[in-house]
Length: 508
Image (cartoon, rainbow, N blue to C red; front, side, top):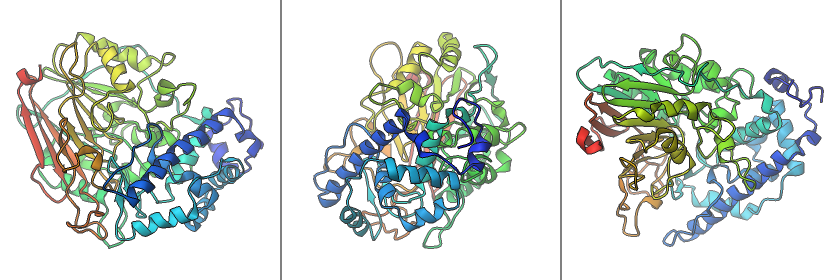
């Protein structure tokens, strides 16, 4: 291989050079990569038990994530469509060929795999959090998810190709930006998460979820919102010009984001944009003079309105560094973090807001808690430590669902945090059985989750348990005195499916 690994390699060299020596992949980082894929596969093995007996759901393994659960199987039993795809991208193909020589064996048998595809023939099967096990685009058996995994491996082998984290010249920059309401006393924020899935036609000819959501937001009362927030994720790897497949950030997010929203839009960094080395995120989404130029090129920002402080944080860039342990040094950017003991730029910046006495709204791509809201995580603790208290309101994406939690932290030191997952902007998902009890009632800490069948989905039927749920978004109206009104919407209805107003006193 002509290029070396001492930091002089640049992204263009990787893309243009298809002669990858498998010896360069025999490093501890790739061994950890394979170990993570084994944990992900364990999630799939539990899924098999659920498919066989959905009345008694299996115990979900404590580690791993089902998102890459079929990757080891695909390495050793590559679908024809995956091989055809990789043939278009020499570097990804070379990495995949090395994986076939190096990766541990898959525990999934061909019989297991075919049993799953047979079981979902008339729709899909929803995992505990609603993740859709199906063969459609962006469902779990879509082999293009391998693009994200392979690009992540490229990052591990060639870390110098990652875009540099953009930080202010001093710890108090970027400076807070005062916002103004254009239509009355309340400031309206339209929020959509995990929306960068691009434009395509469903197998039944229907328009894809991302475009349905965008068109509804752009042709309803939401279009009068003062600001528009994307909580991150462009698929499959949020690539820019130099990573393969090139320009996903352009085609699947930037070009489709309405021009009318330009200058009053914000977008967060995510695990999927990090798979593409954050090049698409920084160079395309945050380009100077572009639709998201209000961020001034930074992946984190602060906004103010009356008593409110609104914080958009980058939970992706230092995700692995912040969550690293000897057993799990690399986590596919799946768990959020705003820094690490070594990388403190964002936590130092956040600490300047400890003196803020009004309500605080935080937005991140990654979740601040587990599925049920019962346990907060490192990301939550980092933010709480930096601010000196838990935020008042927290919106995140990452999990492809819409969920409203009563509270995340009711113990000590100020207001308990009201958590909201708003990651159902485009990716197909099913009915999450992990948010209900055995009788179908909401768990005590859950006020709402998206569970309306989508009749426009392929094979969509209201009475079909395998039908996808409706995608959605949220609108938050902030009052200058510190109150707010929250509304969750689902596609094809302009009436909120959940809403609640809070006085300043209730949020204090």
